[in-house]
Amino acid sequence: MIRGAVFVVTLAVLPLLGLPHWVLNMLVFVLMFAALASAWNLVGGLTGYPSLGHAAFFGIGAYAFALLLHRQTEITDGWQPFAWLPAIGVGTALIGVPIAAIAMRTRADVFAIVTITLLFVVQTLAFNLHGLTGGAQGLSFPVAPFPADTFERPFYYVLLGLLVLAMLLTFGTLRSKVGLALATVRGDEDKARGLGIPVGGAKVLAFAVSVGLTAMVGAVWAYYQVGIIYPQFAVDPLVTIAMVLMVFLGGRGTLWGPVLGAFVLETGQQYLAYELGASQFYLIAYAMIFLLIMLFLPRGVLPSLAGRLR
Amino acid sequence: MLLRIERVVAGYGAGDVLRGIDLDVAEGGVTCLIGPNGAGKSTLLRTVSGLLRPSRGRVLFRGEDLGRRGPRERLLLGIVHVPQERSLFPAMTVRDNLLMGGYLLRDQRLLRERIDRAVAAFPICARRAGAHAGSLSGGEQKQVELARTLLLDPALVLLDEPSIGLDPRSRRQVFESVRQLAGAGRTILLVEQNARSGLAAADTGAVLDGGVVRLVAPAARLLDDPEVARLYLGAGPAEHKAERSRDE
Image 1 (tube, chains in turn red, orange):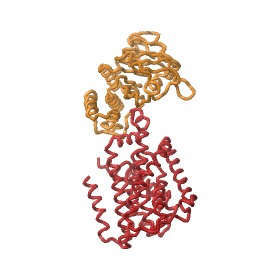
Image 2 (tube, each protein chain N blue to C red):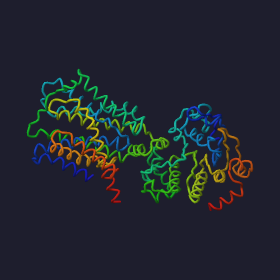
Image 3 (cartoon, helix red, strand yellow):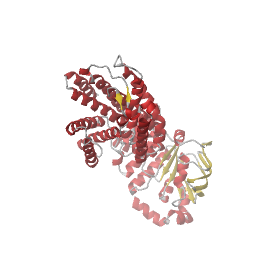
């Protein structure tokens, strides 16, 4: 608890230290991916179901937010649109319930294929439902009216709030009966069923909460995109890959693993993007990191370190 | 009668494994099911615990037709199934594995009481509480599995080959634990490939062959029956004595 409080207070103070815009911009994305990775961890880490479709829910959140603002000519109070986040989160979680109830009848690699198919279905819809999403031309909405010299701050703090929420949910789950049920799902679902553990309900709940959080982060990302979102970025498979990779790097099923993974990988990615221009060469670095993790730290950094310290 | 199985037909896919099973299990004591591989012993346990639905026939528990009741409801009625394969979660601690046995209990005080009772009956659960279940020996894991069954205070325990893959000493401990469970007033329906050891721990024996019950008799009588020995027990009484002395 003390570690968590120190972490949050440190992050809360950072924007007040007069850091340059590029650093704050980078931190916004670090927090965004830390929240996304923590959300993915609720499903991929705690239940062991490797969802590759989370970017679809990120996109649903982004488009839901953009559509809510699309008809407005201007925003008078920049904080007011953040009030939509809980509704977007709950709405997407409810969409996630029937999807999980069907998709989670499959397991392991089949589940991964089902969820990545969902991602491409949502991406195709985003490209082709011109009346709703604007298609490839993008969907526009008014720009957030925050002062230019502190523009990043509101997004930074809202994303910090979402990260804290995701971590609190993980913390609570790990110490609850639901957490034990999810651990048995990860261990062996059939054995768990034999003990009367309601595995179906537990994993659907985890999926719904996870995609709800993901959608809220997607909504904040959309708002940060100064007035327009495009389908190739709103429903981007690379977002899913980043979430998965961050959790695998830090440690699946742990509280701090996804956060560590996000801080390492997102700062690394931003640095590589800065060094290598707007190219996607950083993906090669991603692939190398993934291979190294699988080879040398298959359980992730934190569980491996904990194992060695024991 | 605690359990009555009436003309049950069940199987996997198109093939029936159980072809009209009739069996009565009285309250208290150990009933051991013996028979060759493929006779339907494990399938019968799965049918009683609700993991497999019969296509015909009825399973009655305390006179009530279990019909469409699922495994969860049958657990709440007091029917606990310990499957043949290791059923602990190897990455979880012994303590958490034990807790999972009481997942359906809402009353925390009752859960704690039951845990204390299970730990008293199976001290391994206290000694290795913080260890990962996967690090325990096969015999120790089986002890924890048996302790876990106590958390729902079951009336009927379905034990599928509890001694499989264990060394002689662990096997003896397991059969002692089975007697201990029966001594505490629980009814045990035991499936055991090592038929002699199973019958030695049982009060009643039932011979399954070809998906039907061929014979039900006191376990001691089955052990002494030369025809049963020749067909189902593998070795003659003299060889059995030699095997037992090796175990001891």
